[in-house]
Structures are given as C-alpha cells and as structure tokens.
Image (cartoon, rainbow, N blue to C red; front, side, top):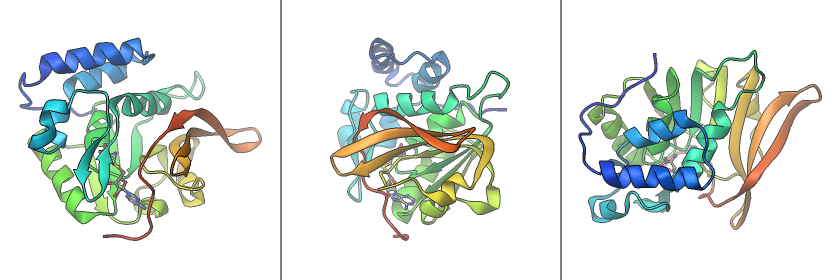
Length: 224
Ligand code: SAH
C-alpha cells in the first residue's frame, strides 16, 4: 500500500490549491501527481523564514548550498517516472531517489508508490528530512547517508530511479540497479546547460530521451 499524510491540517491548503491549478495550466496532466502534491505541505520542508513563499513555483534554499526543487520540476519528473513504459507493465512500486535534500520529492513519491528509498550525501539535511517523514507519518520512506552515485545495491533492483542533482553523465551503477522494465529520470549536464533525461530499456539497450532543460545543483562525490 502507498503512504498517506497525517496531521498536516489545513495550513496552506488554499495556496496549495492555487499552485496545483498553476501546474495544471503549465502542462502537468497526471492527476495522480497533482493529487499527491495537493496533499504534501511544502511549507514544512523549508525554513520558517521562507515559508510564505512555499507555494510559489520556484526553487528555494534549504541550507548547505542546496535547494528544494521547483514544484513544476518535481511534478514533471514524477510524471515522467510514472508514465507507462509499456501497457503491460504496472506503475513502479519500488523507487530509489538520489538527493533527498529537504525530503519533499520523496514525500510526494511516498504517496504514489509502495516503497521509497532515498539517499543523501549531507547528513544534516538527511536528519531534517527524516524528522519531516516522521512528523507526517510517512512510513514507506527508507533513508541512507551515502554517495548516491553508487545507488543502494542492498535494495536493488528498483522499478524506477530519480536523481535530483545534475551529473555530467548518467551513472552506470544506477542503470545496473534497475529492473529490465525500469526507468531512470535524471538531469544531465553542466551548470547552466542541463537536460532532463529519461532512460528506458529499448531493443537497442538503455537509451535516453530528452524532456527539456532544467537547472539543478550538482551531483557531488562522497559524503558530508
Ligand atoms: N529532492 C530534493 C532536492 C534536493 S537538491 C528535495 O525535494 O528537496 C539535491 C540534493 O542532492 C542535495 O541535498 C545534495 O546534497 C544531494 N546530492 C548531491 N550529490 C549527491 C550524491 N552523490 N549522493 C547523494 N546526494 C547527493
């Protein structure tokens, strides 16, 4: 069973509704994604000083030079991850995220899939994210402080992998941890010229498809 949110109350509900309508207007079509994002209180994932901006469609700082992704990007990546690979293949059940950050993307995913695994290299950020998962009663998110470029081999294979920091190229270790029908969504490229790519297994092997330009913080080596 997928997760559900507890005790977020009605705070920010109207601002959230407006954000959902905006995302819809900007081309997000998957109602499952819009419904999940309507439920996740994004203001709890950022510093109180910025909470009034939580439902703007913009990335915001979360400390340690990192950012919570722009809602439209979260919606687009989640939609790309859930899109059927083939009519006979069910939606992903077990998903790995690289780059937990605030935990927002993981929380959205937790409402849509059975189990989320999320890896973050900065321990301090991970602690904050874990606290939020507990506070919201999300029981299907497993976390790990490690270099996510190596994936999480102990829990592989995954139906889908989402990378929320930009690397120069797709990580072979990550593709190796996907199911044969799996999908990987990741921003690839340098600082200001990144492309969101979706990798799926075709008859010619793993192949990328471009989903447009994005801006992410870099994927960095090691743990901090
Ligand atoms: N998904 C996040 C966005 C976080 S920004 C959210 O919803 O808030 C990207 C995150 O990726 C940062 O927290 C950064 O520390 C982390 N990151 C960068 N390189 C990484 C790596 N090699 N392994 C794990 N996390 C990494």
